[in-house]
Length: 425
Length: 124
Image 1 (cartoon, chains in turn red, purple):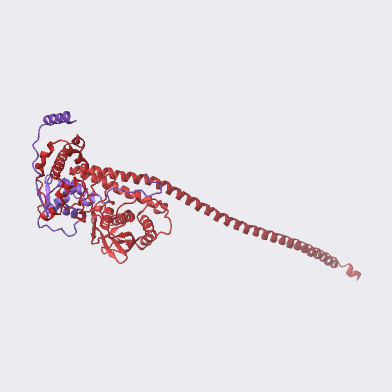
Image 2 (cartoon, each protein chain N blue to C red):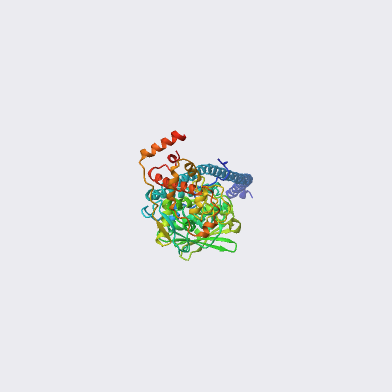
C-alpha cells in the first residue's frame, strides 16, 4: 500500500483527475453562461423582429398615405391646369370666332377681287384649323365648344368638318341622306368628324383621297370616314378604343408630347353628347375606317335654312329658298316687291337689305328716270307673275329706285371701298 | 357676354367658303362681272349631286335674270365664290348670261354737285 502511495504514477493520476474535474466544472459553467446569453440574444432578436414588423406596417401605411396624397395633389394640379387652360382656351376660341367674323366680312367686302379673296380664304383656312385645336384642348379640359343656334344638314356638318383640317381638298363627301343634326350636336359632331378626318389625312399618303360616306341606319345616321393609309396596329386600336370610350376625365398629360388629342377629344364629346365613335374596322382601301353613329335623338328631319344668318347680319337670310313660295302672305314692306319680281324663287317674306334702298329711294327725283334700267326682264311666265299679289301703287317707282340704287351701288362699290355712305346723302 | 361656364354661341358661317369652292382657283371677273345678268337655260336640269349652293342658285335664277352681285348676296357668299359656281354652271350649259344693261350716261361730277346743291337749298 505504502508502495502504492509512493508510486509517483498515483500522484500523477490524481493530479490529472483533479485537473479533469476542474476542467469539466469550468466547461459546465461556461456552457450555462453561454446558454443564458443565447436566450437573451434570442429574446432580443424576437423583440427586434417585432419592432421591425411594426416598422414595416408603419412604412407601408405611410407609403399609401404618401401616394394618396401625391395622387390627390396630381389630381388637384391637373384640375387646376385644366381650369386655367380651359379659360385660356376660351379666350382663344372667342378670338378665333371673332377673327372668323372679320374674315367673313372681308371676304364679302373684297369678294369681287379673286386674288384678295383667295388670300382671305387661306387666312380663313388657317384660322379654322387654329380654332379646331383650341376647341380640342378646351374639350379635354372640360370646356365647351360653343353652340350653334340652328340645325344643319348632315352634309353641311361634314363640309364644315372638312374645312377644319389642313388637307381638306383630299376629302370627298358622298351623301344621299336628307337629315339634319340638332343644334346642340352640330358643333360637337363637326369637331369629332374633323378630328377623324385629320387622322385620316395625316396617316395616309399625300395624294390619296379620304372619303366620307353618310348612310342611314336603323338607329340613326352613320358618318363613315375611309382612308387609304396603313391602318393601325392592334395596340393602337386598343388604345384608341380606350380613349374613344373614356371611363372618366382624360389626363391631358397622358397624351404624349406632342400630344395626340384626336381620339381623346372624340371620346369626350361622344360621351358628353351621346353618340358613338369607333375606329376598329378596316376601310376597303386598306386604311382605317372610322365611324360616327348619330342616334335618332340628335337628328331632325327639318330642312335647315340654307344658311345661318351670321351675327353681323350681313347675310340676308333670305330664308326658305329650299321651300319656295310657302308664304303667299303679302309682305307689308313694299321694298320686297321688286325683289320678288326679279327672283321668283326667293322667299317672298324676306327682303334683302331694305335699309339702304329705303334711304336712297326717298331722295332725289332724278332716280326715277333710271327706271329705264329696269329692263331687267321680269319672269316671262305669266303663271309666276300672277302668283304675285297686286302690286302696290308705287311698285314701278320702287322697283326702279331699287334697281338704280343697286346699279349705282355696285359701280360705286368698285370704285371706293365704302359701299353705302356717300350714296345716301 | 356669357358666364364662364355657359356655352357661348358660335356664329361664324358654318361651311367655309374655301370648302364650297373646293380650294379651286377663282375665276377672273371678265366673264361674269358684278352686273352681268344670268338666268337658267330653258331646258336645264339640276345636275345630280348638286351642292346646296348650286341648288340655291338654281332656284334663284329660275325666275328670270338676276345680276351676279344679287346672286352672291342672296347666297350670302362672297362674289368670287358665287362667280365660281356660276361659271361652272355656265360652262355646263345650264346658265344663260347677258351683259349688263347699258349704264346711264355719266354726267360730270360738277353738274351733279350743282344739282345736289340746288336741291339742298330748295328742300334742305
